[in-house]
Image (cartoon, rainbow, N blue to C red; front, side):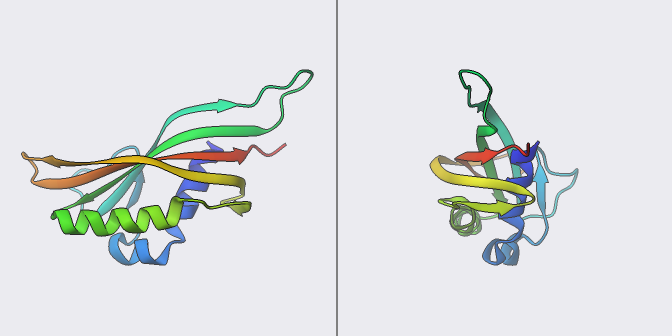
Length: 132
């Protein structure tokens, strides 16, 4: 759960991003009848470091940050701010979690015809430490 705290902390402190989506940053799924634009985030995978005698508190997680909007241009503007908020955030404590580093890995643009919603899924690798 600590990785989630770091991710939401990085997203919510990014003024360029919150200028676009406000506080509409949700774990996993948007609420019913969402107001757009909005962001969702979810952990796709995770692992911990292993030691010979004891395991260090080093964690790695892959998070997907999804940007949702009514136009492709709005979705692209949000993605730009998500990347600025999340990529290469190094050696800092966010949401009570020490973040060693974050890396943008990839993204994909998509469109949902039934809801007429444009969206993008960005993927980030996050290295952080669990509190002892």
